[in-house]
Each structure stands twice: as structure tokens, then as C-alpha cells.
Image (cartoon, rainbow, N blue to C red; front, side):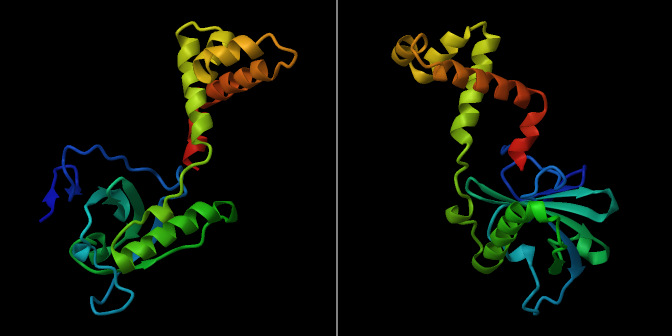
Length: 203
């Protein structure tokens, strides 16, 4: 049974688990839908109460509901605009209408829709719908560069920390300045991320 809290949240997950709800305006991978009351016997009905996965429901004013479906480390967030009985998607099966979105957001929105369709049909969130982020390695290097610089490290020391002391000793004063330029790009990228550029990671 769901546990209803005083702030309007219904918890289906372990209360010790840290969860984050994102706005669809910030994160295109949040699936936006409009909810209507549905016939439980209809093929298109989505009955959240029958889903065997942990779900978190966050209620906001104006009939906005945020559903966070969890399957292990994988997440699917649905931002739902509902009225009437559809405001209680745990209690009533609903029909979900998916509005069109701006063309630049096609890739993340379609991926979110595919995840939802798989949840509805197979009741799982498979790994194949959560491909690894190819830029993650560079983001990690930028974070390390930012931490090192805040600790007072020079660019050469940053190069040694990220690429290894031997490589830094050999290439820093070599004929090519590629290593210097690479560290400079990491530092600039880290500065950009620190100045609210981190929002780009969510898109």
C-alpha cells in the first residue's frame, strides 16, 4: 500500500533512497503526458497499481503529477498533467496522451517514450534503453581538473594527475604543445560547467 505524506507525496520506494525529480523544461528525457481517466479493460489503459516496480508520486498544484519509476539503477520520470480522477493515477487506470515536442528534443523525448512503452508492455526498464554517455570520460576529467585547480595545482600538475606523471614529464616541454592545450581546454570546460553550464549535461 502507498504511504501518503503530508506534503502530497506517495512513496512506493525505500524511504532511505535519495530521489530527484527534474522539470521537463530542463531535462528532455522527462516524458510529458496528459492523463485522462481510462477504462481498466481498454488496451491503452495504463494501470500504475499493477506495475511491480517501485514508484514515487509527487503532486504539484494545478493537477501536475510527477511519477518516478525505478528498476534497479535505471529511472523513468513522467510529468503528467491531469484533472478529475486522473489526478490519482495510482487509484485509477489512465489513458496517457503524448503531446508533440520541439524538433531539437526528438532524440531524448523519443528515448523516454520507448522506455515508457517497454515499462507498459514488459514491466521493466532494460539496459539497452540506457546507453552509456560517451562524453562521461571527458566530464570526469573536467571535474578532476576543477578540483585540482581549486586545490592550487598548476596546469602541469593537473596534467600529471589526469594523464600520469611520466606522460606529463615527457610531453609537457616537448615539441608539441598538445598536452598544454588539452589541459587548458579541460580547465575552460570546467569553468563553463561551474558557471551553470552543468545544465547542458541534462540535455
